[in-house]
Amino acid sequence: RAKENGKSQYCFFEIEMDAAIKTRRALESDLREALARDALEMAYQPQVNRHGVMTGVEALVRWRHPLRGDVSPAFFVPIAEECGLIVELGMFTLRRAFEDSRRWTGLKIAINVSANQLRLADFVLRLGELVEEYGVDPRQFELEITEGILLGDDPSTHDTLRRLRQMGFSLALDDFGTGYSSLSYLQRYPISKIKIDRSFIANLGVDLESEAVVGAIVKLARALKLAVIAEGVETTDQRERLAAAGCSEIQGYLFSRPVTADQIEQLMSADSLSPAA
Ligand code: C2E
Ligand code: MG
Ligand code: MG
Ligand code: MG
Image 1 (cartoon, rainbow, N blue to C red):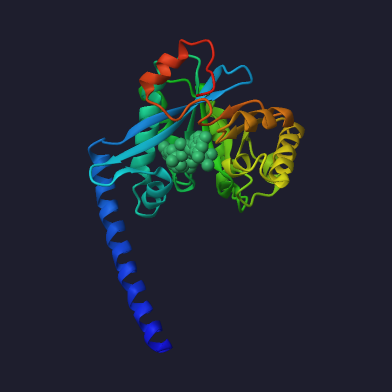
Image 2: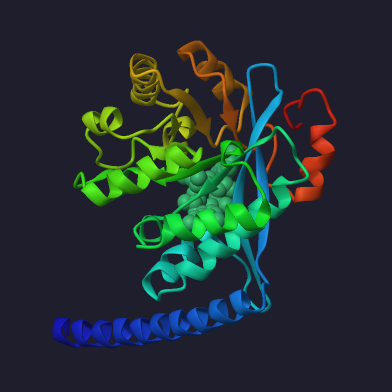
């Protein structure tokens, strides 16, 4: 009986695996097609300071699948990385963000750059070409990278990041606290900002550990003269706890979900944003 169960379970997993592989293949080819048709979108999420003044936005790619509805970038960016579409996806994101940025003088725009994208041999070159083509000032942009990129202390990564800084881009470390970076990396790389990961924010007021971790990250940032921002801030209570810990720049649903470029333009004409009801 046990054996039978084992066997039927095995078959069940096999069927599931098969379905997962088919779904993945279909998504890959749909994504390839969407990129070829320029059918992805960009959303932008405000970042606000202690006064609720919008100081920047983060560019977040969106894919409205005709049959599956919204597919999360957390799901399709890794697929794009594995099947080689990350080059096109990365170029799409940069082009759109550069294009939209021309309407927003003075507003900082953060753009996510995935590890495999940054490691492409001609990444810096192509980025430079886009800067020329769109006539943008790199100082208006912040590239968000993850701790994983810093792992291994690779000389060519050092070189890439240095060149990006020389061009005028600033660098932010995304999802900070979830990776494996040693603190010494922070000093060795030309990073100017830390983004505290959402998971710690979600637990503020829930457990004491998160409070301690957030406090420690803020102190670390200060000691290293880095700016710090919290992502995924959803409640006034979280905002207040962050401010008490010394982190007053925030991004999250409390102020705004990611919105269209047009909506950002409207928000820019307001002096400050208020927490969403
Ligand atoms: P991320 O860079 O850490 O982006 C923050 C994510 O948190 C976004 O999810 C955003 O919509 C979500 N978020 C913001 N505020 C809140 C909040 O208050 N509560 C909650 N629960 N969530 C919030 P999204 O847009 O699904 O992006 C997921 C990840 O996909 C990003 O994480 C980033 O790593 C990646 N990604 C997004 N756009 C791009 C892109 O254009 N290029 C690359 N390479 N990666 C991207
Ligand atoms: Mg990000
Ligand atoms: Mg993040
Ligand atoms: Mg995140």
